[in-house]
Length: 610
Image (cartoon, rainbow, N blue to C red; front, side, top):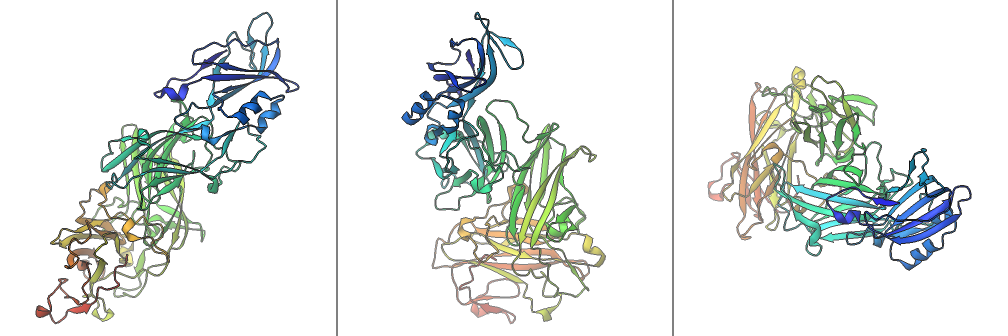
């Protein structure tokens, strides 16, 4: 018999140093031969056995573990294999990889004529195609932020204690092992990578070897291997590893290679290509040559954060279907009534392209993303109705991502389940000139302590009126006065999973960077429908004794005022000034020149997220 391995770029993946040949009587399952050979790729092993029909088991690179070796030597029947498992510590990148293959119903012919296989083919040399009892992981991480100084490495959790030799293993296998790979101490795994267009940081992590993991219940998320991007003292995003999304499968089978491209956000976005440990695709994510890989098929958001889902396809068109299914109520609803501008729709500036969805096809492959942000259309009962509030969108929804031809044919679709938790009520956003009696000031404020620069969220609901309710209104914001050049604007939703709940995360862990996917420069943002953008600072206050200020102009469409656009001001302060005055012009005034309509307020205790 001859060992046969597939060519690859990493020779360590194909090393065979030992080979144990186990032959079992086809009928009784009793052991007939149990011989361990020293072997290497290309070697021909001459194994002597009497003519007859056998079930063969081949074990390569068995671990140098005395208890395991004693078990292997003592095998008397095939069922003894059900009691043997290799410890997880023997599945690492710096060791040869244990392998296995079974070939059943092999008839050894007399007079050295070779063997007859179960399909009646006859061979003189039995070629082996050994399968690794491990999983190989290759990771490419990217980010819109420069993470080189804070990226520490990768952490894998829920790793099994052992890898059994058979699916009928009679022992118990724990799931609590952790593997940590540090950039500073495990440098051989990490290498530089060129970021894709629009991103500023990338890192490659190559050839991580983990023990394979077969789950009895493949959709058991609690037992999935968890990958965490270690960001030190900063927020560290994570995700569960799976080989397929629909239906979900959290197993990591033997001889599997997982190739990741992860976008460092919350949650960690990964598009996983799962394949056999060769260059062959095993069709886990392919349906009739149509491809639609989706990073997440189930996400949860609040009214103040969002989820970014990335995807890739070989189809010329990928779009979100115009209707979603409300799982909670059983109703079919227009997509844009629930989610902010995911579907093409008429707008007040005569454009129709969705604001939070992008897909670019290049030749045979295209990539895209969508930002899921709750919207909640607010249709006024009358023109001057500024009291009606946005509906509460709490519930579970299913939206459909469709990859198709330009004429809509040959569609391959993926359902994405989104759970929205909305605490509180979103008010209308309007200018005080419309109805001064309502008490609107026209200002929104955000504040930072001297040692803070994390995200603040500016949001409000634009109302729609009458026949124009089918039209999405536009808005834009720009940095107006910023003498210290400290303000950064972004339409990317917050990725704090708990913002908008009773236990939000720490804002400093969620820095603001321009949405490079939309070509933002950090000083100008725009959107359609619900007003939502984030504000952050470039740095903490270098002079704590001197507060800093800036203003942002917000331009938005207001129904019922001649179809014109209105402007409002936002004031931003870093540092603390208990006697701050702000005038109706939106400027920060000194006490000696206050205007008659100025208002005084204190910035103390106002360093909130929204």
